[in-house]
Image (cartoon, one colour):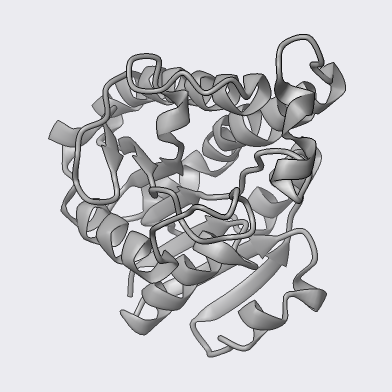
Length: 234
């Protein structure tokens, strides 16, 4: 039975990832900050689901999780946890606009979207190496593409551009060990982190991403794909 670890699995895309992988017969290790109040995730309860409390901005907590999971093979590490900023997004996005930038907020977004996925990969690499599939996939965004988007949300856009670069560096470093590292944009999904104009259902996004992830080989390491298979320009 293959195993995936999904961060931020309590709602939205992360919850749907957990739901679909469980339905497909995977063991799912789901993390979120407060599992006790993650009622939708709890509702998925079955023998192949385990939940762990984790704030991905707490590097000590990530190391602690890695310690608890020592010797547990992880076929697919899914870095899903991420933020745009405070919600509702539309009421706070001006804090990311030039002339009114909230630098403390920018730091928070970078810690969550850029530093955390790399720290997760560092801490859990032994688990990934012990798995058969050896895949690390990070959910990014087209907003992080320099060539495709010019969205003026400084914190979010730069955090995604930075994690894109970080993961391409990681891909080249882990290739000799047979680890596939990839980035995916789930599309503009109908979650609470949008401006009300999202046009992609979570189940469709996740189904598309899962099909691509399942087919990834070392030839795809370092790639950046949209959920529908499109290659995204850097």
